[in-house]
Image 1 (cartoon, rainbow, N blue to C red):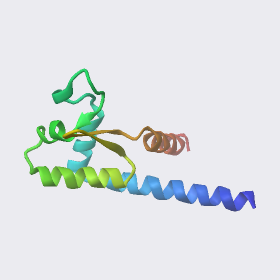
Image 2 (image 1 turned 90 degrees about the vertical axis):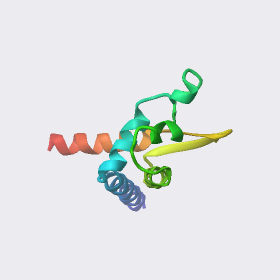
Image 3 (image 1 turned 60 degrees about the horizontal axis):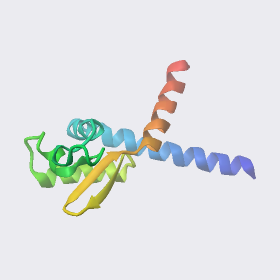
Image 4 (image 1 turned 90 degrees about the horizontal axis):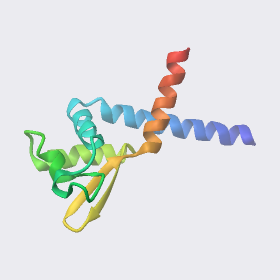
Length: 111
């Protein structure tokens, strides 16, 4: 029975990584993710270590709705976590998913 559980976990992890890599395959989405990973929001500098949506959007010459769509895709892929605080929505990379991707890529490199 443990083998079945292990296979299910492996399949679930592969599914999560596939969704994450797919989300990052879009150039704009990759740039949005990179911006989110840079650190604190300019609007709340010193008060929060996460990026707010408004700060991310200020760095791109595309509509806020398009930025929101890309952030939704990143969230759905498990690459970012978002939380609303008052009028701001703060986002940060999901360390668990990133670590899983790095571990996978390290295994591929070693082969």
